[in-house]
Structures are given as structure tokens and as C-alpha cells.
Length: 396
Image (tube, rainbow, N blue to C red; front, side):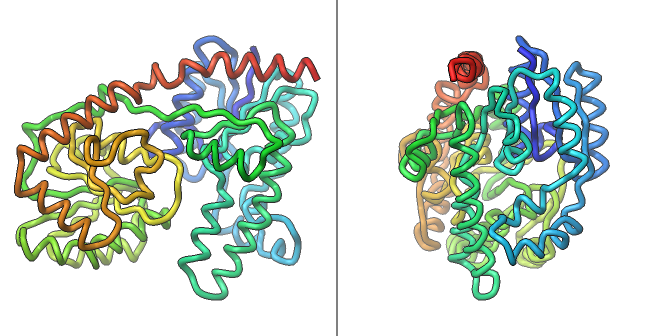
């Protein structure tokens, strides 16, 4: 089958959540099919990655994307019913490349709703929309945390993007989500559209336990640090949770590990014991040095790769309900759930001061991920998904 894969970012290297998933999809499809990739390049590294993918046998064209300029260009859309997201990721160059590519394509697979817009015109081809989760709901959650005028802008984006998601999801052969929860919510909101779940996985070799490297009283959070839910999570943890932990564990340290830290995140490093690393070659190396991983995410759903990766490393994880609701494990057995500052601080202190409990929790976490989130296992349904989408299209 000839597949055109559309991605919001060049899907390589797998060093952030969306790139991890998109790379794994591309690689798995490439085992049995001819796959061509069109994606946006957000920096020079993305252009180099596109060349690497092409050399590896995944022909990839990268289209430059200047986020600041695109946001400014999209502002006139506020006077319309078009979501700003489609303006930010609008591109005449991408449209042309897609138009040229579909002549030798059997199926289009779009990764994120913004890329789905580029495949909408081609109803003569089988199409799959990989939502992961509904982006429109993210904007609803953002609106609840901001004051006017941003709350108005975010509510508008939620409303207009949801209308687009409805139109897009009903036009394609299949809509893909990363957790059964996201699929269920989608079915309730858009009952006429098809939906299925294709879970994310973890690289069990790269994220393997290294207990000999663990440092006492060292907490870690991983994630791209210009992403608002991650910024909010770290601000909450440093300002509200960490001071409570210090009352019991004075020498506690907290490392914020991830690229593109905002100025607000950089300022958190002024607090005693807080480190902001910026880009690192290996988040696994930092996870190995930690004694507890925290995921104080209060916004967004889907599945948090950071939680699965920490569990795969055999680390005890303390998470909010929001961060772990996409993980099909059991709270108290595979991870600890705490949703307010005192509860999170108590859970972390208990794990720091009782290493037997912490180690046993980490061992159970590793076994759970091995049993449920190995990439080879979770992508087993992908081939049937592609074939069924093509068959459904032909039967129309």
C-alpha cells in the first residue's frame, strides 16, 4: 500500500511526546508499505531529521514553519468561524506538496487535526485521522485557567476547532485515539463518527531500570518545557508542593528536564534545590538518577509518555489524576495518585523516607509497562487498521 503520512513536526528523532508516537507509526508502517512523509520543520534540526529519515528509507519533505509569524498571520481569523489552529498551520506549500503526492497514494494518515485539514479535499482516497485526543478540549481547559481576553480566545478556539473536528472525523474512514477513555469521550461527543484506540508504547530497552544510579531525595519531571500544561505543572510543584516536602526532607532536589524552557520555567531554578536542564541528550539518564518521578499535570488528557517512561525505568511515580488517567494501571499498585499539594507532598515524602516501599512500587510499575506498553505489542492492530480503512473506502 502507498501511504502518505502527514505530521505536524518531522517525526524524528523520537525525543518528545508527539515525535515518539509519530516516529513509531512511520517505522511500523514502513515495514510493509511504501510510506512518504510530509511534515513541518520548526527549526534547523527538523530539516536535518528529514534528511536522516529519507536516508533511512522514509522519503520525507519538510516545510518550514515559523510559529510566531504564523500566529500573527492567523489573527484576522478571529473575525471568522475558522479556528486559529488552522491558520497557524496553514501553508500553501504544504497544500501543493500534498496535492502532488496524492497522485501516487492509496491512503492518507494524518497525525493531529491540523494536518487533517490537508487531507480533507481528497475523498477519493482512504483516510485515517490520528487525533490521539481532541485538541479542542485542551483549549476548553486552557480557558478555565485564564482571565479575559485569553479566556475568550481559548473558548472561541474550543468552539471553532470542535466544529472542525466534527466535520473532519465524519469524513474519514477511521479516527484513532491513544486511550479507551479518549475514544469513549469522542464517541459521546461525535457519535456518528468511527473511532478506535491505538495505544502508545515505551522503548523498554532505552527506558530500563538502572537502580545503581539512583540519587537519594532526587525528584524529576520530564517534558517539553514551552508546553503550557508542563509549565503549569512545574510552577505548581515548585511553589506549592516542594515547600511542604522540604519541611520533612530539607535536602530534597527537583530537576525539571526538557527542552525549550520558558522564562517562567527558568526562574523556577532560583529556588533552592531546583535545576532546569534545558535540552538533554537522554531523559532516561536523568530518570535513572532520580529516586521519585512526579507528574503534577493539571491540564490536558491523552496519555502522558513521561509517566510511562518513568514507570518503565522502575521509578515510583506520583501523579495527578489528570496525568495518569490515560494509563490503564491501578492507583496504589502501579503509581500513586495525589491531586492537591498536601497530598502530593505526603506521597513523595513517604516514598523518599521508605525506600522498600518505593522500590516495590517501582518494580510493579516496570512489570505493568512490560505487560501492557511494549511498542511491538501495542501496534499489532495497526496493519488491520490500515487494511480495514482501505476496504471501507472501496465499499462506499
